[in-house]
Length: 286
Image 1: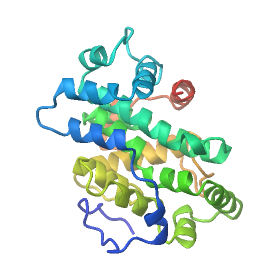
Image 2: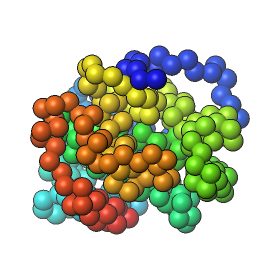
Image 3: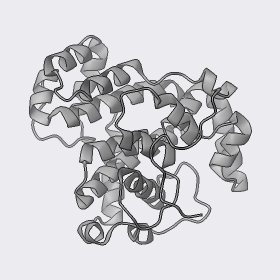
């Protein structure tokens, strides 16, 4: 049934987590700490830089990523303070959260199917920021929406890599609905798991809404970040970055028809060129 996604936090949540939620690894500490700092009205640049630098290995990997094609930065970024000045706080937030989530899922990436889940998240982030430019919405928030929309899935695969890999294989083979299969196995789907993981964290309401409701269909109305992330999710599948082969795969053109008319006219991405760009940027992330 089509509906406009409800306001963030309005879906009834179980008061007691299922066993699977209770066992999930927490959202990465460094990412949640940085999100809290970035959320302050007057962010303290010095404190942000100090927080990143507290973990030298992480800081080095952030700088490596800042200079990678994933973020297409002009000019070499030589230090965290330089990154903040050159790129701005929003872009540094996107880079640090990407690095933190990448480290979070790293133990599970030996499995090809699970690696595809991470690549799907990166692809959706890249597509979301391109849609945001066409929609004249917050580009960096859109990037995080695409990246973090499936944080619940990433957490499930980190905690239960073998079980989740088997779930993907069975769902693919039998054309099962993935969220229904997740619920059968874990008593929770990845949207509910993601909403549970980020509750109480200093995430913008639009981002929390996108994590919980990005699979919900919507009718015409106020176009919000959750709708943008929903479209990014479907375009990710349309371009061939799906975690599972879609049962009813839509074309790239068909999905873009969900965009508001002014944004649709501005979104002029060529599917083949966009696919090649995403492939190149994903290959550079590590």
